[in-house]
Amino acid sequence: MHPLLKKFLGLNWLLLGLMMALGIYGIYSLYSATWMRDLHFFHLQIVWFLISLPIFLLLAVIDYHWIRGISLPLYLFGIGCLVATHSGAKVVYGSGRWLSLGPISFQPSTISIIAGIIMLAIFLQRSRNFHPILRILGALVIVGAPAILILLQPDLGSSLVWGVVLMGMLFAAGIPKRYLISMVLLAVAAMPVVVDFGLKPYQRERIMTFLDPEIDPLNASYNINQSLNAIGSGGLFGKGFKAHNSLNELGYLPKAAVHNDFIFSVMGEQHGFVGGVALIATYALLLLTGFYIAARADDEFGRLLATGILMMLFAHIFMNLGMTIAVTPVTGLPLPFMSYGGTFLLTVMIALAVLQSIWIYRKRFR
Image 1 (cartoon, one colour):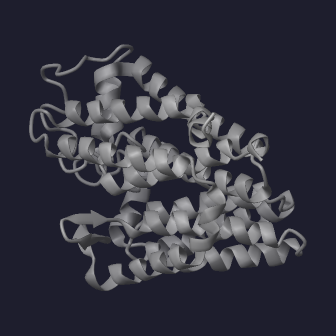
Image 2 (tube, one colour):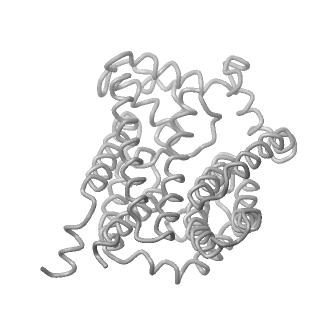
């Protein structure tokens, strides 16, 4: 059998099937969320999915160890892009998170997180014999620069993703639990200072409305309350596709964010509790499949790399779904495959391609 064919046949077909199902459902979701106004995002998402798919298949069959060679240049490139956002960024809804390359706009924070995960995996593997405190300090140095630059954009959501990725990878690297618990306690203790001095007024307002969605129902809390109303109105089985007089169709859900931040609100209204649970179960199965791949990795680098990717995906899923049902503050994080975002979709599929490579190149292929 040809080696390339053997590698394709060695794909984790469950992970591939879940990815394809989420990608197709995400395209449908964008159509159902925007058909009454503008199908621009729907059409672009199809294009990006078709671009991302061959890239995914190509990277999936290449040995993931090759990314060691580009880890430092990619990390420095990500830092450089984040620095550039503070001078030449495209400002969207008060936040300078985007850079433009001709007709394409991309969010450097996604590049920096992927690059940071690779750097962390390399460092934690090579420092396995160091004292835990030295390993933690080294990891904080790697994470610190991009996380602070992202927070200053300001982008609270992506900076929180860094925290989730860091804790997950430190745990996977075998850092004793007492150190991790101490880090969590220190982070909680520092939160009031960060909220008072590190956040913009609108970000503090988001946290206050998360704590009490009724504090300002017609202004700051409006989006959260309408999201809860839309999901609640879906009932058990939902109102169905193109339902008349839906809150989305009537414009109660935020038109500027219904195709990204609040896409789950539309799905909850259309497909109800059953549809929402089915989507969450699909994400859960995707993550569980990923953790199974991490456990079967050929080496510690692969295991740490897979863990970082999965923690990144988990953070996006949890925080996006959470903000639509008032479980987490509104952070502006996209929902993988569901929310519109071409470069984010490409980034997620590249991350899943790395997971596939870790699966293909486990011990039975060596």
